[in-house]
Length: 164
Image (tube, rainbow, N blue to C red):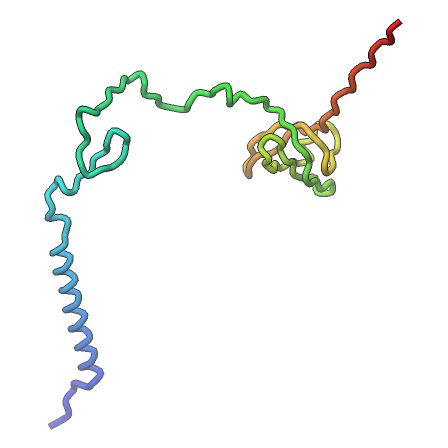
């Protein structure tokens, strides 16, 4: 008689396969035991209360508010007086590279650093630490300062006429 064709490695692999199969069947049985599909519909429902929060209990119908169709706003909110702020802002040039033609202005109102390009200059060249006035436009990479001018100092008051 010849030797058995079952080697130790083959037996070991067969044991591993059998073990995996039994573990998989155990996991399947556990899933079926804990399945939510067998729960009643009431346990799977969630409710929204009068404040818009999700809860497990249904909302009290006595607290229900009646909303008129006219009160529902669909679309963009209307602009308020706060939105109509003066478009001209003031700031100080924190950095400007004349050779490359760009820099940054620190807005005095928002303390935000805003990019400025040489093409956006309206009143001649600017330098670092200059006080400037400008308008903000949104560019593809963020806010850009345009129509940048050096802020003129307030003119001194006119001298009073000598009393005679």
